[in-house]
Length: 244
Ligand code: COA
Ligand code: AMP
Image (tube, rainbow, N blue to C red; front, side, top):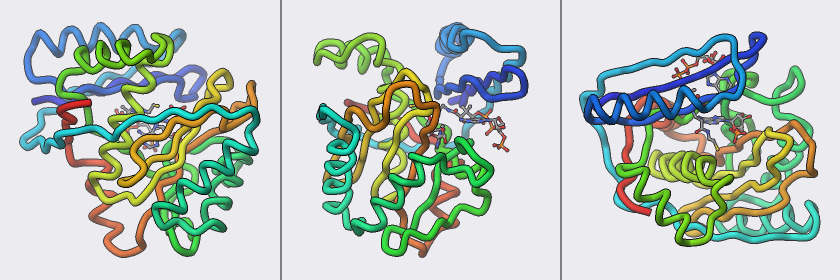
């Protein structure tokens, strides 16, 4: 198989990214066509194709649940309760929420990847706090089938690609040993976020931020032990998710 990755920049800023794991020339051609269309505007696009020698598989993605709230505060309180069920202490969960609210990059704004947070102490464990850690080299075994199933379950088309990407990412995170995850997008027009965990599944929560806010991010709650192997898995080990 091959890992196919696209990233696009405008005015030196990352504006779009996407990736696939593909097995045939035909799949590769189709994936490039799809990814080429992804950024609305860009002045540089980089497409990387990398041969893979070993691809791991996980049978099922996390189960999806969705909850809507009237305001951000209730959504956040709910997220904290859910993260507690995965063993994240309340103070630590609140620290993570505050971090994403004000922008987790110490220089201001968003990071280029996720925060790694000690699930017991709240200590930040990623080496580079502007970059963070990115989960890469993952995909659905049959992306089109999963898309069809999600449409049948009533997921609106405008949310489909985002959900497909985020669900596969969250599934890989737990597979690699992340205990729980908190996320909301930095896209100002998208206020749905999620918490994920082994017991929780993938819980979509709306609204995790006010409309129009350009700040977001991901916090991975982790154990301090075994960090190197965890990062290696997140960044390097290719994973296919077989079923929704
Ligand atoms: N955010 C911001 N900058 C990014 C980025 C991202 N997601 N991905 C890449 N970049 C930029 C960074 O400047 C990076 O340099 P750095 O490593 O110092 O941060 C540079 O591009 C090169 O990154 P690299 O990791 O070599 O890119 P890649 O070719 O391996 O592609 C992507 C990685 C783009 C596929 C991956 O990062 C990505 O964005 N995947 C899709 C994301 C996704 O599905 N998110 C969930 C949506 S809900
Ligand atoms: P998005 O959901 O694409 O709006 O991304 C929200 C935030 O998640 C970004 O601001 C990044 O900090 C982080 N992020 C984006 N891509 C990845 C990735 N592949 N792995 C981990 N974190 C990411």
